[in-house]
Image (cartoon, rainbow, N blue to C red; front, top):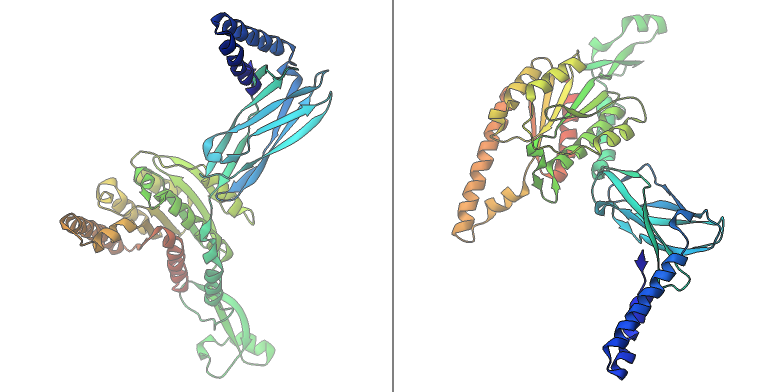
Length: 429
């Protein structure tokens, strides 16, 4: 049962006769009459079972974008039904205008649309659909909550895709489409072309020259079909907020941009989210890979656990047998000395090329520049010590042969891709 505003207004109207007569009995009987009318109206209201509902929700939407959820309401009873429905969603789904009124004849249907603008990635679930039917007096009615399960997957924003065109241009230059192709480490044969004065005579292909009767040289391009393994650390340190978002979100942006770039370069990419066990996985499988990767990483959340680095090393070794580029998106700080990160990088570096990417906290830079008072000076000293300790850990990783990228949240994705392109150009993949 539910009461409408008319019931409240009619009850308040009883103040007039009660004030005129100065009698409590009048007020009592007035309230009793209103309650009786409300009960009668509820009894005369159509049953909520005569209203059927069905949700239609799109499969996914990117963070910061909007979509619409459709709610179909049908009158399956024999009487006209007047009332309202509430299309409930959890708060992070960003539902707008969730209440809708309807008046349906027998067999009639109507579709209402609720605008959704999610504020968090992951799976956003719908709540129950509340149906109200009004009585003929509009004083009260019946109410019931119906289960209509629905899920909207909110994909990562992928704001770093704005850096993709510039990195693709650099990739084309490395591939030799806009520059001279040279033989070197990590390169493979591309094609034959006519000899030009100034070409290295060691590049002359004598068999091709004999067949064509003209001097031709071999051209090369960076080797393709390399393996790139992206590992996202989703343990406790990735839950720390840097700026307005957790560290994990910056790592997801970096993995998406690197995967898009590497797949365009002809390399095979696979990604995994790992803490003490694998939370998500995606492997290169053609044009749909980016969609699969975003869908796999969307529900990943940081866990308040220590990472199991030996298990991660075993996982990577079981997935790839040939030399690969292993990108560890984690947190570089003094705790890495005890967590096992150093040993894990050393074990992987023996068979692969390791690239470690870590998010810098911009708050440390602000503290380092502050000199306003004594507290600010002490804060600057603490920030300086933290930066020195982090740099010491990064130096140890570099001594093992790993590449280390330390960047702010918005700069991590392009910085990791720049280092990937540099390794590709140097033939170190």
